[in-house]
Length: 185
Image 1 (cartoon, rainbow, N blue to C red):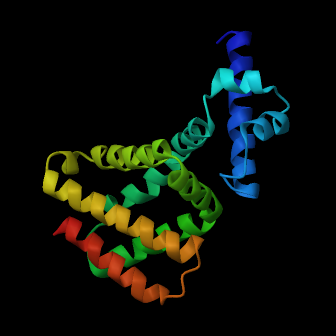
Image 2 (cartoon, rainbow, N blue to C red):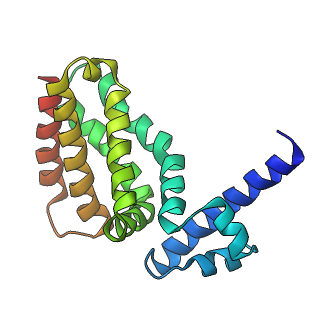
């Protein structure tokens, strides 16, 4: 990579990082492209050379986060056995991922509500995740069960850990674990 490409990549990353910080601090809808450019120390023209709009910035951040989400999710396939107890233990590790990223997931949710392109990217991420497991690719019914379980966990954990839903956490995790158990039956 030559110096010009390196500087362009650094500028692009700075815009992503600053946009993400502003989305977390002020909310996705309340953050403008102008604010992002100013906070990043760049111009709007330069920002628009890299990103057409806010959804593009959010989707770039989502793609960055995808491996960090994929790894713990796919650990469910590494369990020595798939029992209710083992899946509950795995869900405890997923709980930690959600708690550690609650603000990030909250900002993503705001963006998905406001921009269909961001929601479409989230769904594409879920699809890519399901297609990265050979045993799911070979069995469409099981892949769809995996997607339903993943989306169910996503929604339930969003309301529990991001929105602070007043529900018995252990009972909710038990219900989610039963959904996941169906993937392995």
